[in-house]
Image 1 (cartoon, rainbow, N blue to C red):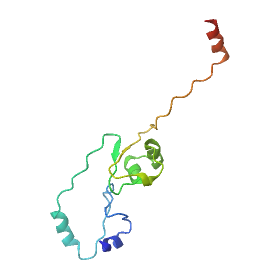
Image 2 (image 1 turned 120 degrees about the vertical axis):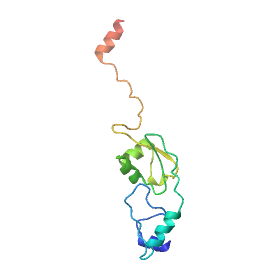
Image 3 (image 1 turned 90 degrees about the vertical axis):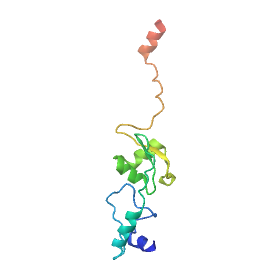
Image 4 (image 1 turned 45 degrees about the vertical axis):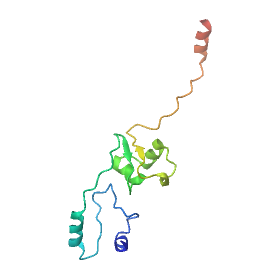
Length: 126
C-alpha cells in the first residue's frame, strides 16, 4: 500500500476518485499482469443506492469541487443551496441538493412596499 501511495501522490485516501473514469492508478513495474488477474477475480462492486434526481449522495473521495464539476455547477452554489459553511462538513453517505440553472436557495418573501401617496388616498376614500 505504501508503494501505491508513493506512486500516486494525488490520492489523499485509499480510494481512487469515484467521479473520474479517466484516472490512471500507477503501479510498480512488472506487477501489472498479476494485478489484472487479481482485479478480474474481485466481485463486482455494488453501486450505492441512487439519489433522487436533483440530489447527490456523497461517496468516498467526493469533494465539493468534484461534485460541482460533475453536475456543471459551482462550489459556491452547492454551499449556498445546501447551507454548507465549510467543505470539511461533507460526509460520505449524506445527500446534497444539486442546484439547477437559475435556481437558488429559497429566500424569505420580500416585505411589502410602503404604500404610495396615491394608494393611501384610494384606501382612505373606501
